[in-house]
Amino acid sequence: MNRRQSDHLMMIIISLTILIIILTYFIEINSVVHGQGVITTKDNAQLISLSKGGTIQDIYVAEGDTVKKGELLAKVVNLDLQKEYQRYRTQKGYLDKDVNEISFILDKEN
Image (cartoon, rainbow, N blue to C red; front, side, top):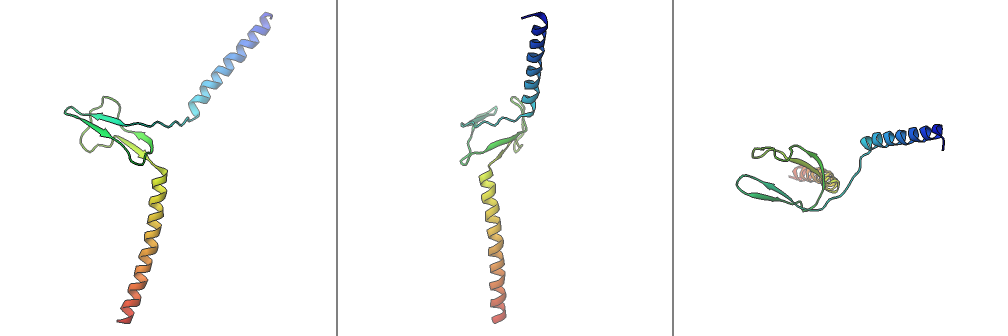
């Protein structure tokens, strides 16, 4: 391999490395982690657990931060629960409409 081929190969390797670094910045890799969390306070530890699971969408504090009671630490999203909630809201709308129609009919009869 001569010097020119060696330089050309080195440029290709460097270009590919830079391209991979740039792509890793823009590509989101999802991973699933199962487990429990522990939030430690000065007085005691509190166990965190979710019965339905979910994905941590946002974390509002960093490890070691001091927080106040009631402060939001993280946002957990469960798409299945959101869909179920929306389905129940829609069903409630239909039931409210039925109740109003029945009430109207009963009021008309009295």
